[in-house]
Image (cartoon, rainbow, N blue to C red; front, side):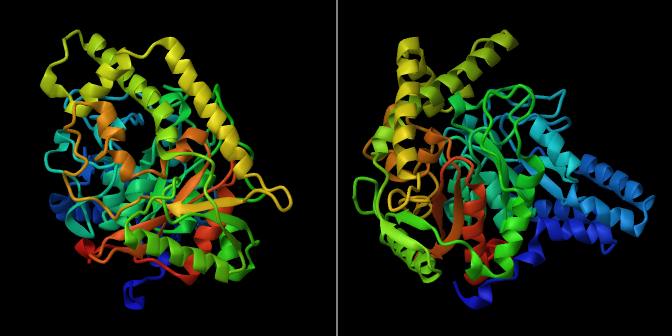
Length: 509
C-alpha cells in the first residue's frame, strides 16, 4: 500500500462529521442526503445496503437540525461528549437487532420483512449518541456464513476492492458499505468472526467486544449460547473507541457483565496513543503465522503477519512465537451444536408463529442442514458442548494471563488463513452442515483463527495491515483477555498513527 493511497483518518471520521454538524459547518440533513446519494450511486455494483428508508432518514435529520437550531453554539458543542455522532447517518446489520422503522429479513427469504415494535437497547444507545440509522446492510442467512451471498438480496455482496471476491460475512454488507464510502460507520454482529472477517476482507476496523460488554436486550439475553455480540465497524480507531463509549455496559437483566473498562473513556485511551504512539505500555505478545497446529497458511497472509510482528517489536513490545493450547477443529466442534441449535430454534419459532409449513426453497441448503443437524442433538450433548467451551476458555485464559515471566498479554494472529475468497467458494449450497464447516474444503481452512474469541468470550480486533498480491486487504487480529478492549485499541492506534491504512477502496474513488 503506497503512501499516496493512505489518508488522514480524521478526514473520514464519523466523530469528525458529528463535530462539524455541532459546529454548524454542515447540517444533519446535508450529511444524510450525501449518504443517501452515495448508497444510490454505489450500491448497485456492490449490493451492501438493503431496506433503505431514505425519507425516514431525511426526516430524522431535519428534526435534529431543528433541535440544534434552538441551542447556542456552546450548548451544541457541549453535547458532543455524550453525543459524539451527532447527526451521523448509519446502517444496521440485517439480522436480529430490533429497530423501529427498519424491518429485517435476517438474510433469509423465509423471514422476508420482519417489523419491529421497539428498539433494541443498543439501538436506543446509538440514537441517544446522535446516530441516525436509515437502512440495513446485507448479511449471510441467519449469520451462518463467512461470506454474504444470500438470495434474499439478489446478487452476492461484492468486495469493493475487487469485484468477484467476497466482502466477508456474516456482516459483509457493513464492511462493504464502509469500504465503498456509503457511510462512515456501520453496525455488525459477531458469533464466529462475523465482524472481524468482513473487516479484514474490506480493509476496515472491526472489534468484537468481550462477552457481556454490549447490551443484547430486551428481546434476548445472549446470542448463540453466549458466542455472539454486536458492535460498530469503523474506518478509524477513534470512532471504534467512541462507539464503545456510548454503547458499552450491560443492560437491565443481562445474564453476563464484562469486567469494567478503563478509568477514563476509551476515546481518551486512544487520544493519548495518537498523540505519542511510542508511549504506549510495552506488552508481551504471542504470535503465530501458521495455523494452531503449525500448518502453512497462504504466503501473502503469513508475510503480513511477519511484518506485523516486526512492527510491534520495533515499538518495544516483546514478541513471542507461541500458539494458544488449542486446535482449530477442537475450537469449532463444540461451537457448531450451539450455533445450529440457535438457528433451528429461530427457524422453528418463526414457522410456528406464522402458522404455515416451511417450504424447501425458503432456506439455503446449509441452513436446512444446520436445522436437521440440530434436531439430533440431545440436551446432554448440548450441555457437554458448553462444558467443553468452558474448559477451553480456562486453558486460553491461562495462556493470556500475565504473571511475571509467565503468560502473555495479547495474542497476534491473522484474521483469515487466506485472502478474501472468490464469490461462490463458501456459498451455502452444501446441505451437510458439518462438511460445510469442517470438511476438507470447508470454512475451517479459511477461518481457523476468529472463532476462538467467540468461544472464550474474549475481545479481538481486526486491523487492516497488508494487501495480497492481487490487491485485496489482509487484516491482522489481536486478541486479549476479558475486558482488555483498551489494550487492543492502544495497539490499533499505534498501527493507525505509524502505518495508516487506506480508507476507501478503488470502487469508491
